[in-house]
Length: 275
Ligand SMILES: C[S@@+](CC[C@H](N)C(=O)[O-])C[C@H]1O[C@@H](n2cnc3c(N)ncnc32)[C@H](O)[C@@H]1O
Image (tube, protein in one colour):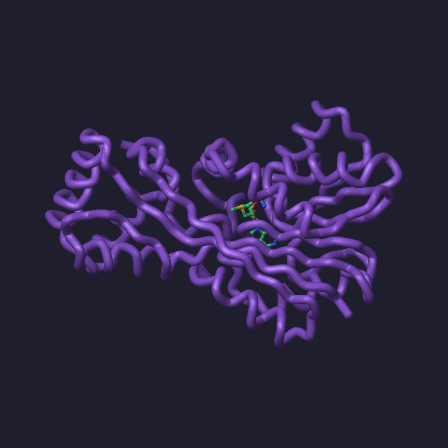
């Protein structure tokens, strides 16, 4: 079982968390999963970047995507990462300094107040951030503001935690835990909302594609999905009893031992152009 020190609320305010390293390790764990690299590459290609372009990664985390984007746009371009966590920005700068890229920069700032001038960027990418936002519409307006008019591209990728499925013999407890997982986040169903939000915001050439994240190894899937923490919070909030939680976890653990653990959720990649 995992020993993650998470409150299940995700990446809203990492700097105030008791265990900041947990979040850095968590992002590395996600990145190591099969299919994640391919998804990232798909997002990069959907940005339609050219050499010399300026690109912004909002909620850049450990900065790996910024470093990859810098390679795509070359020395004459600029790849910039912003994140509201100092822990993440420090880590991103440390990783960038070990890479061969010179055309990157990182700033600690919020998606709601980006210090760059309007229409600066040819592309803006936001990966797994909207699910953590209290005011997603305001955030979208701000990223549109910094995107170039005419052909500037925006790519947003997010899971939809209301699509979370877990194979358990305790169906009712599972439903309550899925609800708890989604409701713990500020915007747990972000994935499904982005298409409509892009349209309402007046973006054009709006497309959406879906992916399915599938987890069949009990470890580290259990940790990745934060099932220990989320089920504990479900008990604290009176959604399930302690006994129900123990039975539920034992069932999943036993499925893991039999090699038949299964959990999954959907993710959506939404793209648009600023007219
Ligand atoms: C799940 S992580 C994803 C990191 C990175 N995009 C990736 O794909 O590995 C979410 C990131 O969004 C950042 N974040 C959360 N709320 C934010 C906000 N209001 N403004 C800027 N960054 C934010 C967090 O600090 C965290 O680094």
